[in-house]
Image 1 (tube, rainbow, N blue to C red):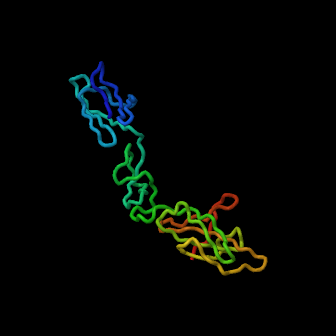
Image 2 (cartoon, rainbow, N blue to C red):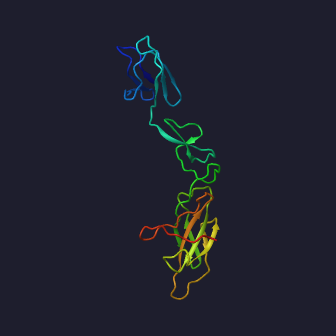
Image 3 (cartoon, rainbow, N blue to C red):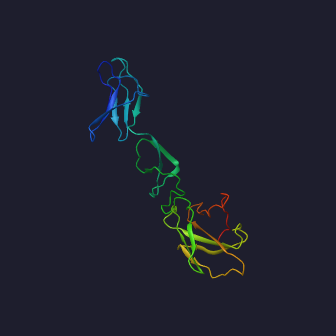
Amino acid sequence: MVVWGGVNNGPLGGGIYDPALDRWATLSETGAPTERWYNTAIWSGTHMIVWGGTEDGTDSLNTGGQFCPCSFQSYYLDSDGDGFGDASAVATACGQPSGYVSAGGDCDDRDPADWATPGEVLGLTLTDSVSLTWTPPVGPGATGVAYDVLRTAVASDFQAAASCVASGTPAPSTMDHEMPAAGQVFYYLTRADNDCPAGTGSLGTNSTGARIVGRTCP
C-alpha cells in the first residue's frame, strides 16, 4: 500500500506499507511531485501515478509524477515466446509488461527454436582409435544444434590444412577411420551450429587468447 500527501501541517510526504511484514517504510521526497491537495492517484499494477490537484486550495495543477516501488529496468518484446526478446523492441518499466522478458538479444524473434549463437563445445575426447565424443555447449542457443568436426595435421591451421570429418551431425559423437602417417599427429576441434543468422559457434581460442578460425563445412 502506498500513501502520499494528505493534510497534516502540509501535504508533502508519504510511506509504503508491506502487509506481509507488517512494516512501514518512508518514501523519499527526491524527485517527488510538488505539494498538492485533492490530486488524482491511481495504481497501474506496477506503479502509482499522481496527477493534478491544487497547490493552495484554489490554484489547480496540471503536473504529476509516478512512483515505482522497485527499480526501473529494460524489458524486451518476446514475440515467439522462447524467453528471449527482441533487443530493438525495448520497454523501460518497474514491472514486467505482458509479452515482454528481461533477456534480450534474440537472434530471430519469429522462431522459438533459436535465440542465440551456440557456445563453445568442450570435452572433445578420442575414446578409442576411431571414436570421438564431446560435451554439448552449456548455451546451445537453440532447442537443437548440429556439429562440425575439423581435423588437421598442422596444429596452428584449421583452415587450409583442415578437413571436415563430420558436418551437421546432430549427435555429440562421430568416427574418423583416417589414420595419421608414421610420425604424424592429428588435431581435432568441434563447433556447434544452429539456425540463427550468426549460428556458427566458436572453436575456442589458442594459447595466446586469439580466436581460432576454422574452415567452413562441408
